[in-house]
Length: 198
Length: 230
Image (cartoon, rainbow over all chains, first blue to last red; front, side, top):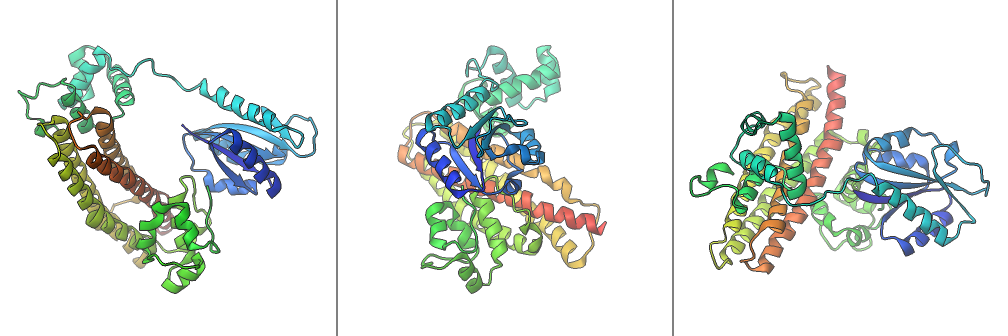
């Protein structure tokens, strides 16, 4: 998941200052916007882990955030220029002009950490015996239904195996998986001409 | 991440992202840009600057979506640009990949089954890509062109049926990279293999942005026109 920090503030000094501080701690890409409406240009964004630092978030409409939240992991940080400690809607965290560089670093780091918990970690990238069986049948050109019948499992299980296979190997297309199967000796190429399969 | 505007100097664009070079070429812009701004150069080359910026920004910036500009230029302009991109792929990138892969295969010292499989897989990918480009140029583009010039849609064809087409091709290109990176046996010339892989990476980036311009700009425009006509 791509990480991105978006700073939305009308003050150029604050935008650039925050960027400079963040750059000294993080290599993440940083986007500076003057106005919240500029965010509309980015509403098609997908699969990002976003941290949005927003000036006085309570006064802003949340439509665009709801849009972004559909396809991204979004954390909002309120930038409160007036030093007030009032908590604002939808913001777990806040910054002000008094926040030190180290505190900023900590807040951002915590945001990333909280996000990481939800991403599933694969236990191993090795294919299981069952996955290899499924892969072999996929490579031979069988449909999910036939694979399910042959292995006495449900189609749903076949699909779930296929999803894991693609995640582990990084290969999605059937012909790509066939090449993988041949290279890893899951298919006997003496009895079948590989050219017919790919 | 930066959004370019009319006042940006062209040489800064290139320093910022050299992947834009072939994009600029498609607009008929060559190097030796001196101190010219985007606006200067567009005026000189008779290019609609809004269109130029929409393409360049969409290309440069993965999340950029030109909402306002969308209405300000004609689908015919986009189609013209997309066709030039297709020519670039067919006449330059694909032949380059062909010869790089050929050299790589020649460099092997044993049978290297992996490399042969990769080569076979590349050929199926190439066929699919060529079919896809052919389909766009013979079916999709003419459909949109007719819709724009005659102000009516023809037949039962609808632009929505076209939308899912791209994903398969992207998938295969990605698989090709994975196969080389993860599963090749090490009997080959590494420099030649790097060259091939780097060309693939750059092609993938270019074609990905190309597909985004089709999906995000052209198809959205076409849908809007279709809706108005029907």
